[in-house]
Picture 1 (cartoon, helix red, strand yellow):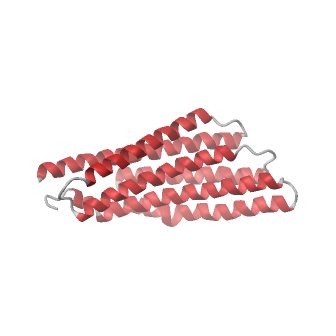
Picture 2 (cartoon, one colour):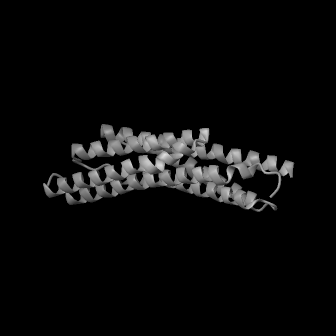
Picture 3 (cartoon, helix red, strand yellow):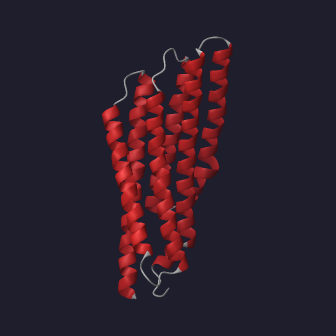
Length: 222
């Protein structure tokens, strides 16, 4: 049983490292998009698409590894729960990358009001901070930092989304923005909000893993 436990420890650590790589790739995609939005320049689509491809590959690796580990006998219930949480976290992080792609597909949009650009730049900054907090929370196994992501930082993005929506609708009512462009901007705003939701979900699930499952991985009996 000790050998089996040591093996599971190693596999869990490998899953953790892959999750951290997904967080880093998400951050890179966000930064590349942020630079383009702030400078009103062309997106570096090749780099962003390659990062998304890498994210998808890592997610598939995690899902496959989780299924392999779940097929082993004599796993504790909490160990099984922990593996399911890793699977769910990988899916949430993969969705962060998907929403970055959604944003660059919708953009660019002509004649975007400066206040809307400011909102979108702030979206990028706040979500980037959430990803940095998630990375440190996972690396340091810091439950308080992880909790702050979904209790405080996510709420900042939600408030910003409401402010952004108002700025867009005000611009539409003042005829400072064409209707089709306004619709695209509202859609982009929604993508930013969903990104924050997925980062929050990952933070919540990793904290749950630490509280409920982490210690059981090293148990000597199921």
